[in-house]
Length: 402
Image 1 (cartoon, rainbow, N blue to C red):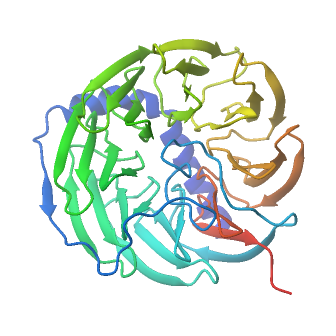
Image 2 (cartoon, rainbow, N blue to C red):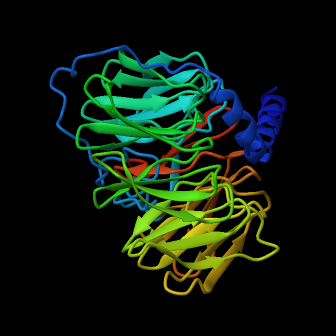
């Protein structure tokens, strides 16, 4: 029965991913016909809430681990990873988890789950009208996430109670990013929004011409988005005014990553693009006919850029000149965004495996057979790694107590 369910969910996942770039144009046209909406319900700040939550070694609070979306964890993992627990969500999990205060927060086809990091036991469940495929963002005592009905939610971190919601004009796949008491996210209605974290009041709304699938990347007082219009936009974080835009010539599903003065953007048809923010200008493009489209987001650091392709390969290129330093080939396409933890690279695959590769050489050092498509990306904190699969299983790895 589980195999049949996994197969059905896998087909649905492939169908969504395959036709995503086609739906961009169609949904943008539909969104333009809808009426604008705003905050439905304001909420007070949760009692005893911290001022801010950061992705240090004890937390992974945002889709790619930090506001710059680098995909690099600050925790360490044991050399030998063991399965500590599995939670059956009973609905597909495409959402990347957030980890904070000893709790795992993850979206499912029916809402948001909070699980105890130590045991996997549920703490609370928050129901939504449509699926949550975006990654939860944790900040100032709240969990922020959007759903495919177009509703953006602020949820009490500890109780799972609704604090406030904000209605957009189309579905939300973009994972939120938090900065200075504000929360940012994109929507298929073509807008990047900045809301007050405390009550959901809209501070500004930057409108593009096409759906925004990617998550916002925050760096140096700016926020960057890329979307179906093939444009990378740099926007002032405080005013919401565009300061620069760079044509990359392709639809973009992946979230831009910022490192050391450069934005790295994975595109659906023009390969990997590096944009120097000084200028700004395109520094290089890395593309080859056999590479396939890039749906997953990149991991960036002093070792270069690690990216995944729909031809099933995961590759590393040098930051300065895009020279390829290693390549690993899985047996299924890779829509799961790679995460670097120490000297290892972790990602899931369409072949139903969770892999770990050596950071320096790309050689496989570990794998776990989940048995179902993995499109979610890993989250790592407190010496543990968490990831969900399309058959509804959520896995936690670490070291067992002896």
